[in-house]
Length: 52
Image (cartoon, rainbow, N blue to C red; front, side, top):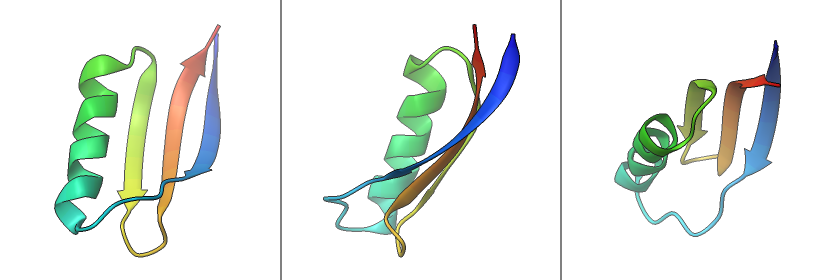
């Protein structure tokens, strides 16, 4: 198992709370997520995850 990084575009956010909700959902609902950071201003998600 290795740790991978990914950066993805996230569109449709209307406030910083939306970014926080996405981060929270990733931690709670997605197995293997090590870190997740959503930037509202740049509309980007940066995450580290454990791949099989």
